[in-house]
Length: 378
Image 1 (spheres, rainbow, N blue to C red):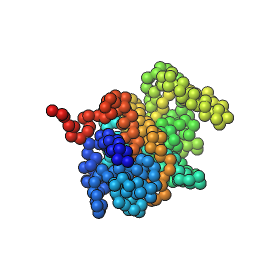
Image 2: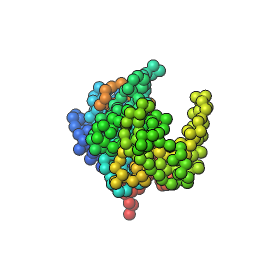
Image 3: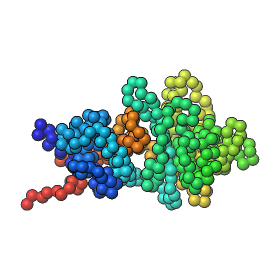
Image 4: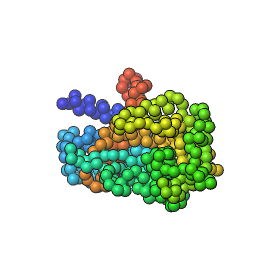
């Protein structure tokens, strides 16, 4: 038993070396330890939280394991309250870990960007309901500035800009699931700017003279990979009701990237027993972003560069869902659920950091520079 605990302590020391340098200071400044009656150790509290969010144990099983490991003497109700109080701490750790791994920030103008996405999660059990998590990250602070859960089914519960409060003058980035006239109109009518991956089947594109924009014809002029083009267009709905006036920024993919997109489309068509249209394959050769960002500050290349940042955030959350097994949301309340999600994100980001470090892992099993107080024998 003692050898097992010794091994666990060694593993914890290695894991802790991957934490942000100020993680214990953050526990103090965010009041995560405030109100603890006995052990006010950030280390013990973090280990207890990771039993719950990292290992996936219930609150009751977590407190039993924490007692046996001499980490904490808490009831399941007390742990739930502590989890809620730790949300700011876990959030700040997420921000620090994000900042460590997100590189290649677009140069030039750096306004506050709001990056939108959504993910499906489920309640535990075979009959648990499915929910859609709508979230908004603010760049560069990486603050989750909006969070909401809706049922998956039902009117008004789909992915849309309309799910989010829009700040006048703000900049919003989203993928093609948000390329709908109603959502685009929601952003522009509230005085904000957007850049969204275009879904040509979901909107009508009009030229400056009000005629249908010849998209296929225009795309054929972008004949080589890496070429960038932009055109002034208007986005409208099926009844030609104006949604927004802006620009379409386009870059042609490499042949390899196109073949990957084509294979994905063919698999989807086969699964749905449908036939791919020629124009769908033509669209797959390009990345098309509709934007209302001001031209003087955001030329086409800058718009596409910012959209690339949105894609990197999406990849982080996709891996977050896979690595941290975000598939079951505990039935507590919005605040504890938010803390649980932040905890899951910490686990995912730490896992990725460890995996990246493993590519250059030392034969002794840890990073010497990250371990506190290394000892030298004289």
